[in-house]
Image 1 (cartoon, one colour):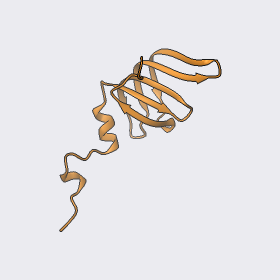
Image 2: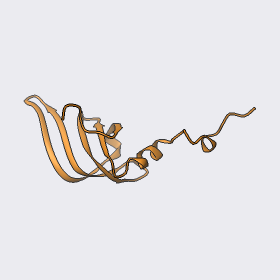
Image 3: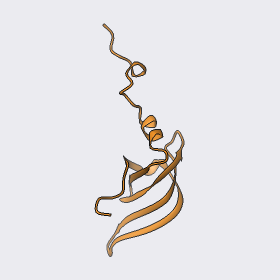
Image 4: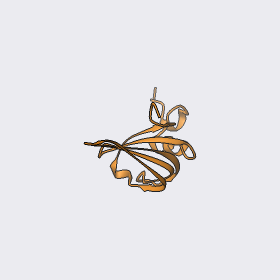
Length: 92
């Protein structure tokens, strides 16, 4: 008996396939530098560099939380810690 392969199990998604399904949707991204970014995913490459639009950036500072609105950004995938499909921050 052989173990089922990823190709024969349609319920198994690879990470880049999951990100691909998020194109056109809102996505919440937590960065290594404790910034959080929420925006609409327009595209990405094999390194998970992302093009986002309608972006809100949240940054914790000693003075409190700073919120920056941006029309469009190119995000370096090297600095991403976690991606959460579908969302704005709770309480926003």
